[in-house]
Each structure stands twice: as structure tokens, then as C-alpha cells.
Image 1 (tube, rainbow, N blue to C red):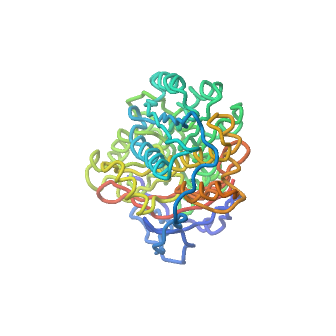
Image 2: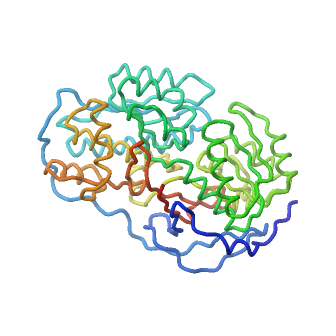
Image 3: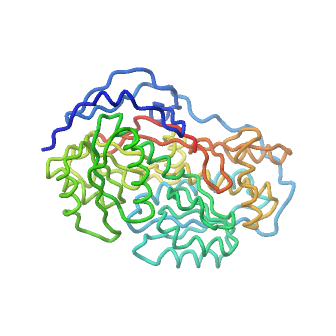
Length: 449
């Protein structure tokens, strides 16, 4: 069994992240408030992560009341939005919350009278994963249906297989969950957008957080694709900048089913902590590690695998393990609305980002007075910054129809886009696993890119 060191004095020398991350604490359903000083309870393994502190109970500000004025411009062709989200494959657990977020957004838009005088239509298709050609087939079907925008894919690797097909057709691709830095410089004709921040941010937060927990050495097991290697690069850079050392980095490929070699090599390096940068392969990797004496408090997971494992592992298997997911914590009122859409929801990852994607597309369509993809894309940045703040479709479209400039802030947090279609600021949530192998929010970190 690996014995971990206590936090070294060097931890006190950590400086603030260059991206301007401010550590915040929140309870599920509460708003973010600055952390107060509190004691930390050392984990049995020797890692002592910063303790959460209490927070208030307010939620996202309510939208404007009253009726929504009629559209000043109407369209003969309704806005059609497609979704390309996973219902099969290694990220299938992300599909339900993302699809629920899309459907909630569509419902609220249509309850407010729709866009340009017509109800918005939505068409859902499966993205699968990179082991299949499902995404290409689904994209072809969506484009054939005349969509103006496609929300998805969840996987950066999948998006790389269809981004040229989508943007080449003059259609917006708007991902709620792509985090690969590669998309920032992609030649997408201004048609690729996302509400999830680049892994430059998640990587810095996770790398720095492991250091603040007292880890001086880290091992990593990494999915060998755009998502995995990109995130691992940024985790490593942040951790080493904090004075730590990555002592092992083992890759595996999508479709692999045996991970004993990677686990053995990482454990042999005797790291203080282990970062699992995977998708649902964690279901196979975690038992291999715990079977060899790794404690859950040594495990740090990411958005690709921070999921509900209550039906997969024995109680206590992951107790104390932690994970990061981009985006602010889902607030209680938002969860209730999502559960009304899909009562079977267990995870809420990227639901807010998906909901915000619908609202931003709808509002940009109103601002453009057009359902053409290129016209909508030209207004996405405009509706996300610089005007009067609003946070849902009814309040925002009311302002637009009254001739006001708007600044949409949504369920995923503040939304402001760079010229490349990336969020320029975002939250990263830190979660901790409970005895039943479900996870609860611990802290949020806010950063600007």
C-alpha cells in the first residue's frame, strides 16, 4: 500500500494561477461566495485537500417578469436545431443531462412564443463515440433536415470527425462539452462555438488543486485522443509549475479493454496522487487500482469520468476521490426543471452548457432576424457581452425586441465569447465522492482565459 507524505512546506509558496482563478465554495443549489478560512481534515492517505466552507442559498437571478412582446420580424422558415449528443458509446452517461438541457431550453423558448414568430424545432441524433461512424451518419441526416445549428458533440474526438462537414455546410456547430484546445485555432469559418471552456482552464485547476492537497508526485492514466492528451498536457504543466513532478504517464486507446499494464506502471512509480483522464474506462481502471492498495483519496478524476458509480462499485470504493467538471454547480431550481423534462436524470454534467447553447442560438437568431447559420453566428458574440444582463430567453428576447443590447449570462455561469468562439471566463467545479459512490459539490474555481 502506498504511503503518502504530508503536505510539504513548498505548498505555501504556490502563487495564484495566471488565469486569475479565485477559489470559491458553494453548496449544491447555492451561489458562489468567497471561501472563508477553515480547517482541513487530512485524508487517511496523507493528502489534505482544502476544506469546503458554508455558502448562501441564493440562486441565479430571476428573469424579467411580464409578457414577452411579439416578434418585430417573422420568418417563413422556423429555426431548426439539431443535437448530436451521446446515447451510446463511452460518453453515453453525458447524453441524458445534455439532451435534457437542450429540451428544457427549447421548451422555454417555445413557451415564450418561439423565435421570429415560429416555434423552434429540435431533432435529436446519437453521436456515438470515435469507435463508430455514427456521428457522421447522424450529421448527414441533420444537415439533410435543414438545421441551422447542431448542438454537440460531447466528445472532442467525435467533433473532430464532423466539424468540417458541419461548418462546411454553413451550419453552426455549438458544443456544450468540447474542451480540446485544438478548436480555438480550427479553420471553422466562424461557425464553431462552445459553452465549455478549453482544457487550458480545467487542466490548470486540476493540476494546481492536486498540489494544494499536498501531492508532490502524480501519475496519470490518459486516453490517447484529443481530449485526453490535451487535458493531460495542461494538468502536467500546472502541477509542475506548482513545484510537483509527474512521475508516470500511461496512455491507452479508445476501444481498449485491458488496463493492467498502465495501472502497474503508474503504481510502480509510487505517486502521491493519480489523475484518471478517461471516459467510462474508469469502471475497469478503478477496481484494478484499489485492488493494488491505491486509496480513493489518491484518485483525481475529470469531466470524462466524474459520474454516478453507485451501481458499479461496492459502497466506499470511491469515498474521498475527487473530480473536476467545467461549469458552475447545477442549482436546485434548475435541477427541478431538468427533472421535469427527464425524471430519470442522475447526472447534471453539461446540462447548463446545453441549455445555454439553445438560448444563445435562439437569441442570436432574433438579433440577426434570420435563421441562416452564418447570420446567426455573426450575432453570437454580440448577445453574450456588453449589454444589459439577462439570464433566460423570455427576459433576454424582451430586451432585444425593445431595441436593447443584451449580455446573456446563463446556467453554466457568465458567458462571454472570444473571437474564436471560446468562453473567455468560466467555472470549474470540484466534486467529492461519497460512501455510495455518488459525488457532491465541494468547491468552484472561477477563471478567465
